[in-house]
Length: 376
Image 1 (tube, rainbow, N blue to C red):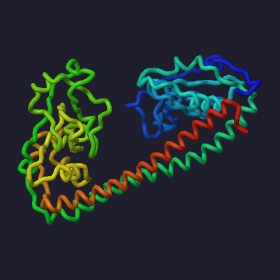
Image 2 (cartoon, helix red, strand yellow; image 1 turned 30 degrees about the horizontal axis):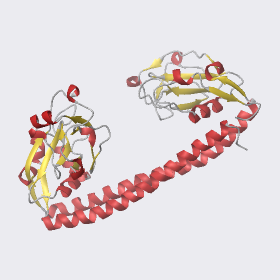
Image 3 (cartoon, rainbow, N blue to C red; image 1 turned 135 degrees about the vertical axis):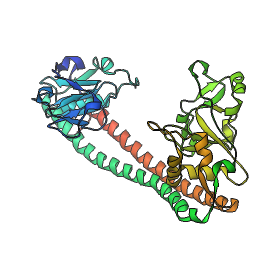
Image 4 (tube, one colour; image 1 turned 90 degrees about the horizontal axis):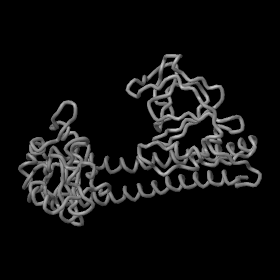
């Protein structure tokens, strides 16, 4: 920290702020006289009409999401939305934007949906003279404006990279499915069944047989983050839901039809509430996964899914899907070509994700320099 700067605890730098009311998210309006500010990422989260519920802002304040750690600089009258909103009202010696940047420079370790402010209110905040705070804010504003433009470009390019492969798959199935023979998916698979459905929490353990749930099935891949495990005895009881390499795991509820093949590296595995398909001789595992994750496949899955409030892609629905089926030779050619395209798109995604990380790192570096008194 720069010599001569004063230091105070954050809580000593804030006035109380009167909040008239907090509007639950389910009551947010799309139009109204007053914007609703909540702890969500978007700056404005809804609108409200009742003037008596509005907070009057005489000088800028900072909104802090107690659960999300999202910070917002607010210099207009607004209505507080939902739960977890802390209004930080800086005293005269602390500029609101300087406070916002200080909080962003000192994020708390994530506590999930627990509250964070109780851990940060005692943070020591460096306090240069007010004019110096404004100078630092001006430098950061200008730098972050450029970084925000670079981030928006990288995010747009990342979105385009992801859409490239989706567009390619759509072209394959839309243009050629009319010329392919159609069979019920049930006739193309050795088995279509569903994973264990029942209470599980007390049966989980720290290691053992991997036990997949729908959140572990992502388009084209099994995500092992947050994986659960069961013991071998319970695994043997659940013979119907055992997973083998080459099986296709299909999401039943939530994002019905999302599919991934079971890799050799997973070894023995079992699952809960997932449709399991074992392709037969006329169907390649990779082709089935590709079909189900394509926009064309998603439409067929949606048409066969059942349920009113929440759609389910159950075993009966899976067996009944009219599956456009080229020859094995054509499937092999399509899978090989699509795999190359997918690899190209993944390389582009990696490039733009790296750019986004570089931008985030540079932003944090500038913030650290600012509060160390190193911005000139």
